[in-house]
Image (cartoon, rainbow, N blue to C red; front, side, top):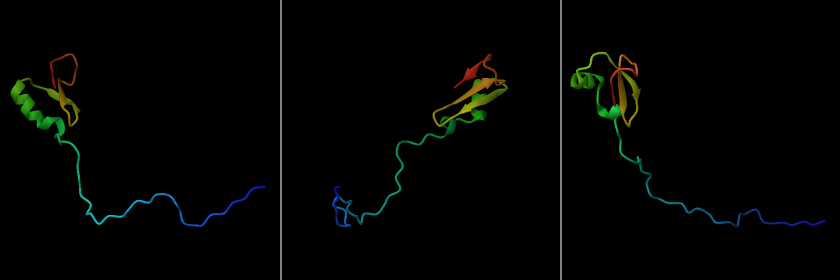
Length: 75
């Protein structure tokens, strides 16, 4: 039989405390939904009636004529 003892204090490395204030940091650029282009602006610029916004992300949007992939579409 083998047994061992140790003290209760950890001997490993510890993380030092700091008095630096925490900051609210956001990383990367902000892109508005659909690139900031409204449905009304797309309809006005394309002059295509019945456009339906079928995809909205911060990267871009997609508008399809009548919501169908068979007609003209804009991204």
